[in-house]
Image 1: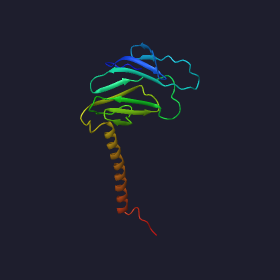
Image 2: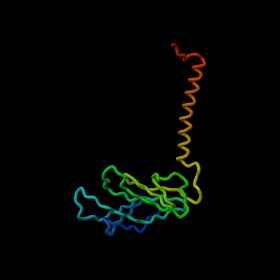
Image 3: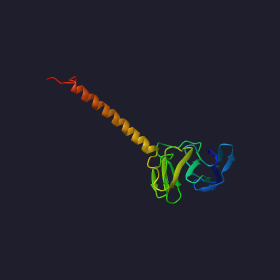
Image 4: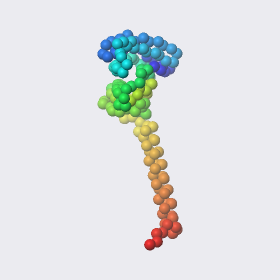
Length: 169
């Protein structure tokens, strides 16, 4: 797991296939290795691993590293399920990474194909920012498309007025 400045990670615990295990945690300067003991697993078998930990973050900002297994997820379905619970009454105020799939109150839900290295959310009380990154990029895209269409229509109108585009039967 990545370690970010001013973001503490503590109280690491884990389960493998529903059984509590003791994770082996090795802290380095900018990352932390979290290894889970796994036994009696044959090639091609799948396991379900749950890793829990606390992340200290500044108020209104969540940037939490995520434990990412060394093994590839199987298939092409969205098999990574993740939830983030914000303080009660909070809303997202800026772009969030990864993109939130659904929201129920202060709980954000994700269904992912692969595990990202971190989650980043700016949040707070109130309705959130009106012009966040997603809204601004959508507006810019629409203006660009309408600009191209408007330019083409003006060019066609001028060509018709000048008689350069007449159909003869």
